[in-house]
Amino acid sequence: MVALAGGVGAARFLDGLTRVLAPERIFIIGNTADDAEIHGLHISPDLDTVTYTLAGLADPRRGWGIRGDSFRCLEALGRLGTDTWFQLGDRDLAIHLFRTERLRQGARLIDITAEITAALGVRSKIVPMSDDRIRTRICTTTGELEFQAYFVKRRARDRVISVRFEGASEATAARGVIEAIANADAIILCPSNPFISIGPILAVRGIREALQIKRDRVVAISPIVGGRALKGPAAHMMKSMRLRPAAVEVARLYSDFVGIFVLDEIDQKQALLVAQLGIRPVVANTVMRGMREKKSLARVVVRQLEIDS
Ligand code: FO1
Image 1 (cartoon, rainbow, N blue to C red):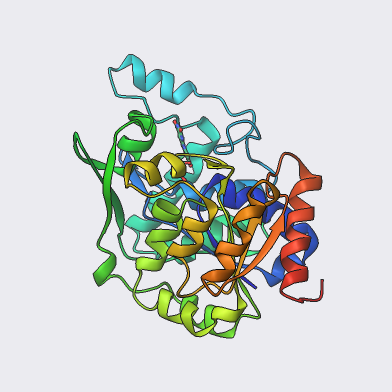
Image 2: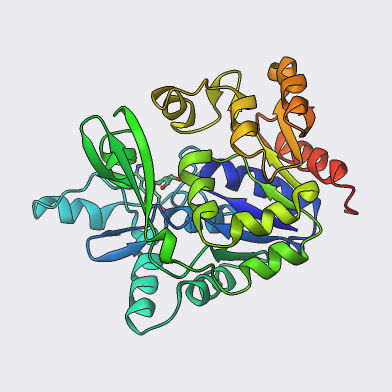
């Protein structure tokens, strides 16, 4: 089973899926276009969010970072006059120090990620979409912004005109990614932002084409529920790009490679519109407040795919 994952929304769903299926059966392809160099360190927020969640270390309130972490290093940096808008916890920093040093030694992100997940006891495989440098750039009415500057520093308040993934057209998928999709029983698009979380993964050469071949076995979970994003700026981005913030519009963006689309009960009326796109709609509760809902959504997906749990 392959899952395409962004950050917090994906991590929540995968937290349930790894309790419904053996975690070893799940191959997670993570977005790395949100990666950033901050204080000289290489940060991979989406890989870390999924890793911390599956390791049982995530901060449940924020969704990112480590539960109970302290911020003493950041406070000390602040006293030196450094910009500290990106909150890096002390224990979180250890991961970034380790990753940065290993990159400096010439190791690949895929191998470093495997070292981190193994050390933290994560049993699913988590791989970056690519080892190559790909960066999301958000074109707004106030100019082009680096992703974390748009998302964290400016709190996603700018009007988005378009999104581009610098480096994507020259990048190749990380080792095993295309093969994992080709050999998968099924592929799940987690409930992540279609533009900034799933979009960059699809922009890597060969990934969208590999999914198109498996269309009947590709299921997407809507990140839009009742016209709003489960988490983050997806609905706001859709509006500013003159798209209706609706589950069916996400299905439309995916219609060339998705065969099954899970939409929330509140959006039941859109099921017919999804079917008109040639996609099988599945209506379920997609709002994951606690573990019970996470597992129940995972069971719906597994059942639709007729996978033995
Ligand atoms: N998100 C925030 O909204 N504010 C932060 O200060 C912040 C710090 C941070 C540190 C490490 C990390 O792995 C993630 C962090 N995030 C923060 C989350 C991150 O910016 C986003 O969740 C993703 O890039 C979007 O998926």
